[in-house]
Image (cartoon, rainbow, N blue to C red; front, side, top):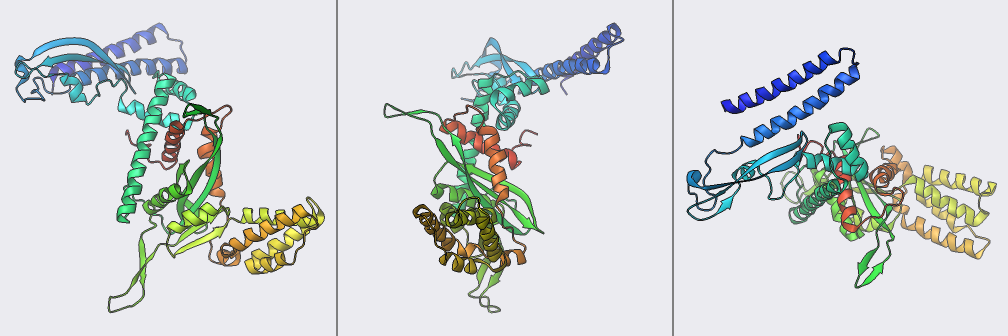
Length: 453
């Protein structure tokens, strides 16, 4: 053990204890909160001092030149201004001694190399992780204030934003690599975490406002764009368990493999049995885990998301949206907010709830709307129910204990996207929105919470 370092750290601890004792003698009537504050302040200062002392003791005393390997005992030394690194323990001053090899002329900072600090790094990796966590939870100014209030660490709002967006961008890169891995190998990516029983997949869209942006010399006004959101979890004993999320502003064609990769991570490609020829060992087909896919009827969910899963999938039209469309039919035929409409909707709901889609389709075929506008609505809704008929076997779903509502992903749209990205006056850049979306998903997936532990 480095005796000098030990004595240095013990002396710092003794100074801290003496400071506390002197304060206690001078403030005998101070209350508990005042004593707590003083211990916290002195303790934080001691942590920063200790970290600086430990950092200064890193590395070999006489490192070899990283360029030519010659021993640096006779290297030219030049002391530089210490570097201040902001950390979870507070601001730490790192000595800088630049060595220049007499043999090859290479110049380097051995202590910074030993500590793994980048050339211009001013924030520790642990503090950057905290900044990313808070930046994903709330607006950047509030995040910086929370960091100072809870940890006593001062960070500029723009610094926190930069580090949070960098963390989100890194997460995006990891997700793209996972997508490529699954597409190339048809195997689960890193972080394999299968659900206990049936796999549940839900998808939805939520709008967010983007900034004005220049394009070919023209200013394109910021507009509302759809962010696609996917949820993957386990469905067992009538309960959703351990949901995880993906979100991105992209086409359905691009989003489908993103959600499919997350489903694969949760066990979508697990083989749960075999069917076909038996004892001779030939001709058998793998049976994959059953996947339930719930959507609101949007075509991109069925044509792109659902299509990524195999024959074991069960597509279910969200019951609430089914009922919404029944109300549209009732209003087209009997008028909005009339007793006749309410009675018709109750009857139609009972038909599809108890008997599935066919009786409802038969009923719709008999209806006539009194107005041209009503006839247009009626034709549109007939098409909606025809195209989703195979997803409306609600008696079967109930019998098998399947969920029939997409409330989980709609709730996620609120707490994952809207609470962070749809506050008053918010406008997002493409890069910033993408990074924060990945941070939000990682937070809810508990993917980065313990990364700096």
